[in-house]
Length: 165
Ligand SMILES: Nc1nc2c(c(=O)[nH]1)N[C@H]1C(S)=C(S)[C@@H](COP(=O)(O)O)O[C@H]1N2
Ligand SMILES: [Mo]
Image (cartoon, rainbow, N blue to C red; front, side, top):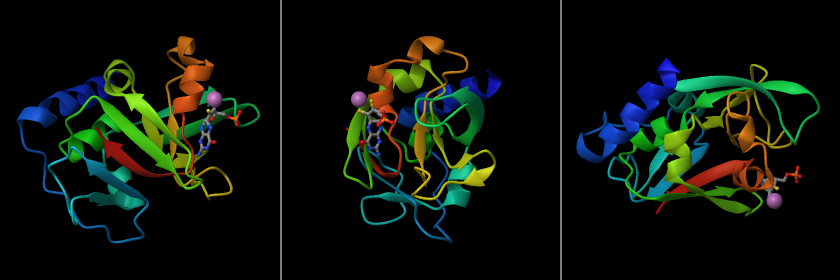
């Protein structure tokens, strides 16, 4: 809960205060953030490698999901922290996957719940075959009411980019 509140503070301050300058990725870029952001590290975009994402405030959740048998542990930065790091302003994040699937996540979801963009499942990075490298995971463990089709549709796997709108 404390981590979640920190994420919220980060998100709220993003609109007024300046975020820390973004590092340059040292490894493969796994996430590109574009749109209504002001903190960038490449041409009109903020690019992240896994270590940069893992360095942001995050959360771990152990939960049942519709995509895997049994419970698994997902870990990664809060989506609110990613948005804070790029000084995002907007109402919706449009999340796109490698297979061209995309979904709109309302910012209100991110303010109300500690949604993460998981970089690891069960302590290991996820390959594309395992629905990685990034998977939007809602906190089904603490908010079971989220376990529904509408939220499953926003639970994008194989994420490669986020556009803030
Ligand atoms: N990358 C990616 N993520 C996705 C989808 C997709 O096609 N590709 N489908 C979404 C939708 S609409 C739902 S309901 C669930 C479906 O999961 P399932 O195909 O395992 O039932 O995943 C969501 N995440
Ligand atoms: Mo769906």
